[in-house]
Image (cartoon, rainbow, N blue to C red):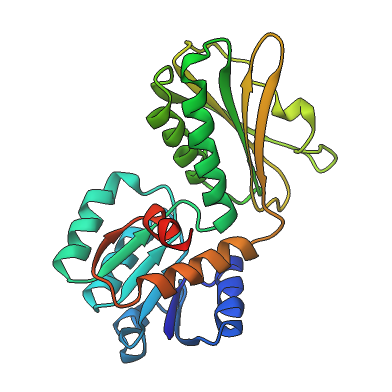
Length: 261
């Protein structure tokens, strides 16, 4: 299939490599210095576009691609305030959109486990949850989009938890291990029993670690997804492009996962 890339940073390069390994053709690469190429015939020839840019540029990129009839896989996060506007534009254009905070197959399996565990904990008030997410120092938003998705999964399945709260961001120095038990502890802040605190750590070039802890006076249950590289995210995005090609409408990563599993 023909794929267009919107955003050509480290993630864009990883997506290009994996797409070519899977036999796909890259027909257009859009970056900050050639956004006019969104109007090109080459871009319009794509079966799907994979968008990884920034929260401020993603909405316009998605709407522009949709206006050209190109299905879009969007991995940019932090633009939720414009979600309704973007989805309406995609539908009106007769195109397709699959936006997700994380396309990693492993992360999405982790989210299924997360929701199941949250449901089991509904009637066990002795267990209280908190979350810690770790990313590279270049990440702009916090908590991460994946952390918010995981938190929303907990809220939807657990009757005791009604909201999540941002516990702030901490920048670690190079000698500090973000995977240590010290950093998995609950944040030092006042919360109510129905709140899920999310602590954000930024360290070096960490591609992504998400840890959820259910703590009680006598024990704790911890689940973690630790990405080894960007390749898991890139592979999932290419698989999403393969899945959405030829479709019309708004889709979710859950729908894709249901078919895969």
